[in-house]
Amino acid sequence: MDPVELFHQVAATVPAYRAFLAENHIDPTEIRTFHDFVGLPMTTKDSYTRRHALPDLCRDGLIGDMIAVSSGSTGEPSFWPRSASDERVIAARFEEVFSDSFAARERRTLAVVCFALGTWVGGLFTVNCCRYLAERGYPITVVAPGTDRREIARVLPELAPHFDQVVLLGYPPFLKNIIDSEDLPWAAWNVKLVTAGEVFSEEWRTLVAERAGIADPVRGIASLYGTADAGVLGNETALSVEIRRFLSSWPGTARELFGESRLPTLVQYDPEVRFFEEHQGTLLFSGDNGIPLIRYHIADEGGVIPYDRMLGFVRRRGFEPGTRSPERPFVYVFGRSHFTVSYYGANVYPENIAVGLEQPEVSGSVTGKFVMEVVEDDRHDRHLTVTVELMPGEKPADETAQAVGESILAQLLRLNSEFAAYVPPGRQMPFIRLREAGDPEYFPPGSKHRYTRG
Image: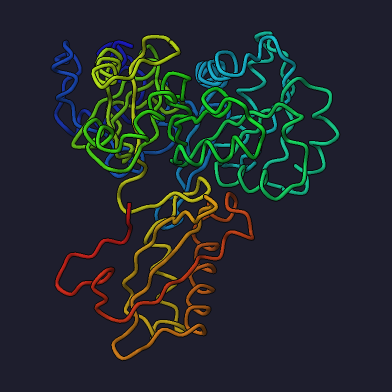
């Protein structure tokens, strides 16, 4: 993708972006070089998409033929139109996974879409992309039970025996929970997984592969990096998974490469259709989507690594990948910044939790300070955990923890439609840990409070 050419197309056809440029006193004719392009102001939800009418954000002022909805920090929805042509471009990311990792051109494949169905981006978007692969000649059949566990357990035994392999597509903790809890002959069905929405560990990949009877975790489980704003931006390849598994065994090397001790999702992307930039440890991208976006700040912490630099880095440390992939750049993603956590693919925001603590039935017992995190237990299951500071003089009690949990859950379900749709009911109740006022680990006096932990 030539970002300068894309800029001129968007400036000429998108009314909102023309207005944005005028507000910033930018003459589009003066943007001629890449250096000019990277000097353009970033766009964000607050500075751009929320300030303009939906038609004005679209090409020629025309809303596309499909709309996805995402929730903001207070439950206010954002609308993301797209067209069939947008999805056909993005279907190439699914095609790479199904073709290169799953050999789906040669195998009759049942694609079981386990993302939430409805206005959210995951489910229907995935259904459409899988059907586009069928149009391109892949012997793929799609069934979409969504997050209905009973329906998943009902359709799989009936359909799976008719296919060479079964691909489950969904959020990592949901797929793991299905595999763990449903007594089904997973190994006999030659299962593969496509995940999105959450960073998981390589220990998680290994464990789930064992439980699902997946012989090769490198080619049997692939993660997508996507957003409601622009669909799928990149995908794991066999090469990126091999490199990530190497780095997971050498934390110091991973920290040297990524700058942090935690391991991010590592994918490759197609520079012909997406242009990524790194800005102060976060990502910007440009792309011609249903809402075309220029230098859009998606608030994901991460960075970009060119192909040659990545291969050179791991080879200098004694690792030679056993697979090859197209020589495309890598992007790594730690997850959302701005103090959100991702749980079953839903962004959980501090504002949602705070409202729960402000309800009259619990507000007298707590200060309003809390830390939310997604904690993985010994079984590699993940739980939304909220550590709450008690008022001075209050002591932890089971009754208080129960009341706090119920209040937070009620507000999460009220304010955050993604949480209500994505998280299985049995996993929605947060685990509450109560700490006395001024707890030195979570609430040290005098320090700036952070509402999340990495």
